[in-house]
Length: 168
Image (tube, rainbow, N blue to C red; front, side):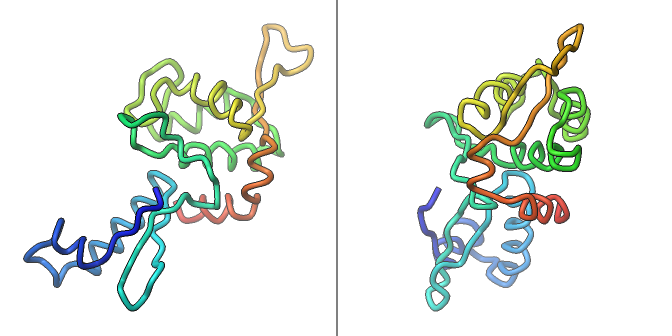
């Protein structure tokens, strides 16, 4: 995700005869990339107008699993981390699914970006160390909760997650 592109390349590839609209479209697209995919568009060389796409909040996991799946999955991780923080550093799984249903992500229902969300959240993000998934003690029937994992604590902060959510 760190390949550079320039304004000139974008104008040639995307805008061609619409250069006068570049600034506004670039701003809107940058906002959408941030909010939908958790990607920041960063200017790396001002004189040449070079840009690079980087994961928001410094998270090193982009969520791409293979060459066929190129959508980053960090935005759902950031949302989950935010819910966990707002719930007192531990969120019941039911609360997580209630929030995610608001953005069209449901347990057991295939999603075009996240695949099967329950597996992605409770297995993949846990295996990557971003989340901890544990049974609530003495719950019958068993209930589960999510917490920040060690990698989340290392790569981002609660304040950065809240700032991201405030922009959303």
